[in-house]
Image (cartoon, rainbow, N blue to C red; front, side, top):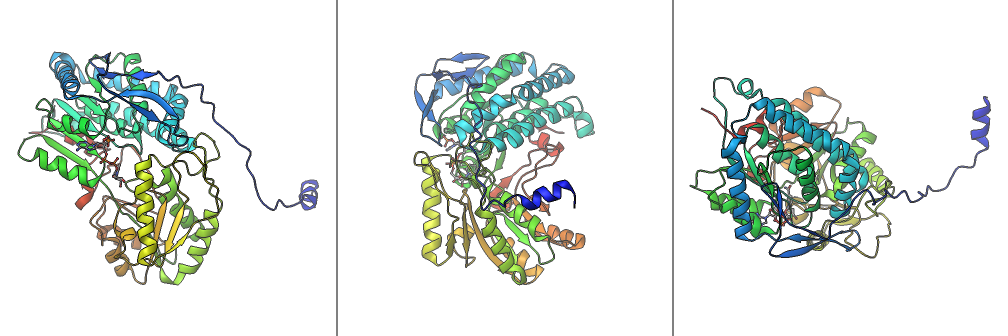
Length: 490
Ligand code: NDP
């Protein structure tokens, strides 16, 4: 026995692990008292404002503009002027340089952005630091690479920009969704008017600082803030040539109706109710980690979240036991603490929606499990939740909850798994866990989902296209496919 082994033998085994607080410092972020709209490279004094808060503490963070129709029109005019006065004409390799610059500045300022993202959105700092920020920078790097290669991406099709893109993004990945929208639009030679979600405007407003630092010509990117009314103004603006929307299916449908017959191009990235399918030959401990990542990552505020777990009947008990045990180790609390796994729910409204759907699950007859955990008194919180005994017809198995809530169903055969997985109006993503490559391919061919992950979940890469079928929307973001909605091809 070595000295180390002797020491380990003598060391008492801790009965439970406790974590000391590990808060990330906030002082790297300097907030202004009030923000205007970023139009034509300048800050436009807002006519109306509202207060944006931290969902973890309900503390007010800043006053932000609620854009009026006139302010939206000014942003669209600025984007049009920038498009006509040079942006669409400059050498593509010059456009690439701006995108590279933006990417590098995001990397340099990533800690500042990560802290702000967690502060305004409630997501754990380890996620904004390790996922949102690196991926946002990666998107700009990736599309910078395409800017001067469009002729190669679409040979014999004369790719040309469309003009002004109106972009509306949600609150679950504020900076990352901004990157998904702005990077391909600029690489293709368009200019942009973007609206962040009402509850999470601050990282988009800080991004304006990055645009200035990168010396992007004024008006190429304009940011207006406000609620759904501002989004609706962008959609119906006659000066917008293309609309890109990520958000709820209901609003997506309303936008599609509004734009019918207008000739404007449209991409919609909407909701999901993904099946995460575990076969009995899967590596169970890894699968349990994949289940956790699939549904509790970003508090389940993820359009492609693995919110319906389909477990092969023969391994149902061990999977549920392991999952419940793993749930007890999740740390829920302060988003700025580096040990936190599950942060705050993004808004009061979203918390009420989650509570309502969870209540419906219990009423319809499902069995609820929540690990013992003390939730903070202030702010919006919801404990990680698992439902067993779920029938396919229950609302919790049909509707997008967009919260840390998992519904577990079982299946016996691969055919039954496919049938159940596809039994949803959505079709954004799915996960398959099995040791057999042939089974993965067999499943992937039959699952009506834009993305199928195999033995992993929630993996993103800028070179990989992302988007849905059915009520999850249409059009792809990411990869070469992500350029196409921003180009006229002949
Ligand atoms: P919304 O679809 O309302 O929000 C998405 C974006 O659209 C926001 O910027 C929003 O502004 C804007 N918007 C709202 N109404 C309009 C309109 N009529 N025209 C144009 N733009 C509009 O989602 P919610 O925030 O209300 O969330 C509701 C549900 O949607 C969630 O519970 C979740 O199930 C789902 N959702 C799905 C997402 C996804 O990625 N698939 C993302 C977000 C939500 P504002 O922020 O002011 O409302």
